[in-house]
Image (tube, rainbow, N blue to C red; front, side, top):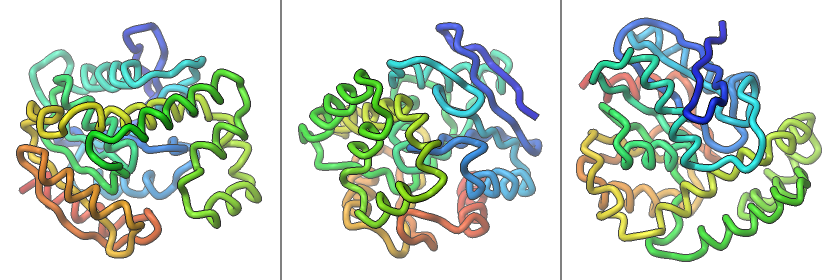
Length: 265
């Protein structure tokens, strides 16, 4: 059953929770939301069975959290803050965050601005070179397409660095209409990745005290291992682990075991 919180600007954010125990929030990456991603729904259930109160929410502009463009990283972090406040009921308790792909960059940004985070788990955050300018340039191009209001052009642009067969497969599937419909919500994904290039990463992430587990798939895209190495090198308390995954997709049961062991340990 959906529950709702109200973000700082009045936007209603939908979420659901399963299980009881220490709170964990699943932060989706590009194109994901509750009704469109059964793999993360399975992870939520498996973690709940292992003794956690697991929250999955529809990011702003997706699913049951409708919002108009522009959708910014700052708004997205405030949405997370509203959920954290709901879970902790105003106490000083912290929550764990699991960030998938670009959702990992959003989780990092949230921790960096001071959200109370107990532990971070980050799966294959697709970072480009430290201090590079390509992220900011890509963000500018994405914003131009969002402003025009062409969902197909926006999604094609966003996926321009994806393997071509992924793009063609999406375009010829029923999922394409859903993906293009949430195009404006891709801005925080790109903005969070551009943010990781905005200054030296050791400085950007110096205030993140939470122990962090950086995960990379056993079969993965070329960008992911250097990105994982950069995370571990620049976060104050991070470790790297390989999990069963290929083509940027993980297996829910092994992921649940890995995440639960880290959160408990």
